[in-house]
Image (cartoon, rainbow, N blue to C red):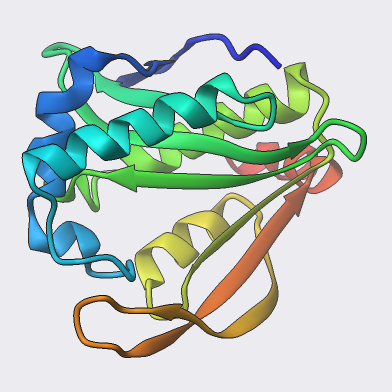
Length: 187
């Protein structure tokens, strides 16, 4: 499945390419970026490049696509957003995302999420989009719910931290096309 670039108000979603590596490394070297992930506290430059290659491979597969979240005005890449595990028969996919901590709490994630959902439901014909996140990641959960995602369940002890060996639950949330269409009134 081919995904287009998506223009937004303050950001654009553009095809992932090597121009993002410096910006990717800048925010993925911040320990706070990994606060709600089971990964180590930060990435070395080499680990960032390896992660970038992983995103490229996923984008080249028929079951996934990643965009860079590019801030308008300065063209800085402030995150990535992926559509994963695409099932075209069911019209279903998972989403995965990461935004630079410097841009948290400023509405960028909700802007990106709305853009992607509009594309997936209104243009690409998807029926169901779901996400999973660590159960104590209130900001992510609240942002998803604010656009109509509903809590579907908990994956107990799903995450295992490389930092300290602590296990955390994952919350699964999803939205269906009719729910998103009905919720457009609260944009």
